[in-house]
Image (cartoon, rainbow, N blue to C red; front, side):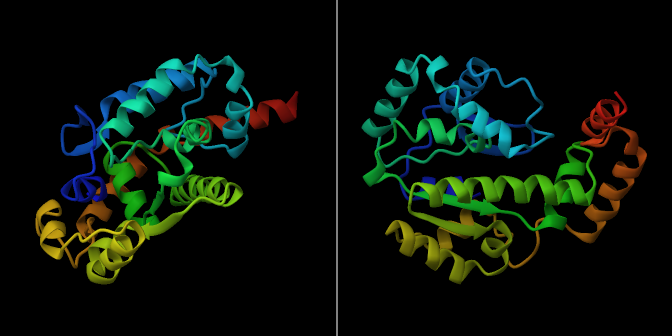
Length: 237
């Protein structure tokens, strides 16, 4: 929804964007492809959607000399030709430290978007990413801390927003976004991209019940169990 909102302000989101069966992510398809390519070239073999480690991110940054930078540099140049542009891809948590070397520092700003823990847990389990509340919190908070550490390290401009604040307190949250980016996005724009679903949480109590049933039915497949198993085996060895 936030990416769509930036699109109403004429930010370029890509010639083609990734679509899922139930919603449009507004992720630039070329960015997604290049992020996958970058992570593959750097040897990331872990299941990053179900496991987060800040050490892994630093390890990837340390392997920068493995990259052929040409396609990434060409993509940044293509985006600049369409400026203003906006990137959105969860993989940026793992790759942004490398993209940062190519991005124009004086013309790039960052938005750190967080989720309410319970709402995130419901969404994950409804999408069959089976995980405990503790895992959801550790994963999401770990990503947020990693992103903020990167931004603070390089003294980069950013605003931290909550998706739930955008839904439940749209006026003040939209004002913060407009002030940060120098935009004039209106409530009408927000209502259009949210399909009028403001002043309410995205996931209801009935969603929570369904997510709970899915979680307990698939408890043995929950995220994080293999890592704990590997640690146990290592300790036993």
